[in-house]
Image (cartoon, rainbow, N blue to C red; front, side, top):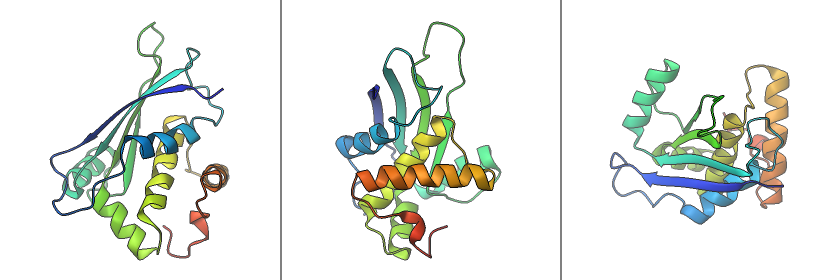
Length: 167
């Protein structure tokens, strides 16, 4: 059973002017819900899952990346899993996803991908991180990439890892 998603989506004032608007609530929800079909102990038994999604400017993303990953440069996305709580409150909250549209759009252009498809990939990728998946070693990376490819194929999106320019 796919959980019910409570999605809080916001566009930060740090976003660069002149960019196309980031994906809307419906589009974001579709990609995240696809990832929520993957088994994970992080999924709430209540059948309800909450997460927040923010679109920020490249400078804000560089600050976050520096603060939390010691890499003071912009990146396409960051995931911040919520701590697992033993109490009765907020067990349904998975965490936060942050995307930098300027970086996402630049990568899409460099990799000859449709921006919509690249956003979908990053939303699925980030949600999988919130569910406890990672890519720190080769086996984990292969498992996560296979899940991403499978979920994207269900949405009609080509395998992003077949692109030689993919990082």
